[in-house]
Length: 131
Image 1: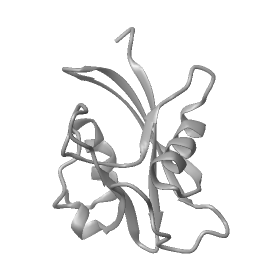
Image 2: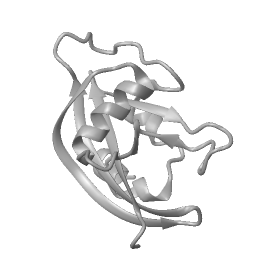
Image 3: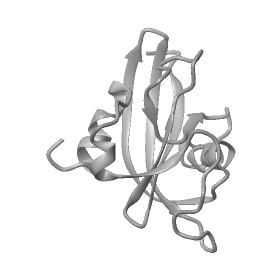
């Protein structure tokens, strides 16, 4: 996995709900659910990337509190190194602030019925008991 892409991912929780979007048509893993995130810039840490990508994709400012996992995975479209960060909304943002794009707030119960990329499995098992 020499050419793997580093990806920062924000697992955002607020008032018992999680921020989840839907991957658009025309991109790898289209139609699957996802947490906000994306490729790290060359001089960017995965933590900073998760914050930036969340702001760009959802319009919401978040603060990381802990790293949940680092997952290396090989998909047919390429190798990735995923850095999952547990985040909360930044001070001053109202709970359940309205995200932009395809993102919305979902409960743990609803998250159980969504289909995420395979590389998210360990994080989902951590978040969702009895998954």
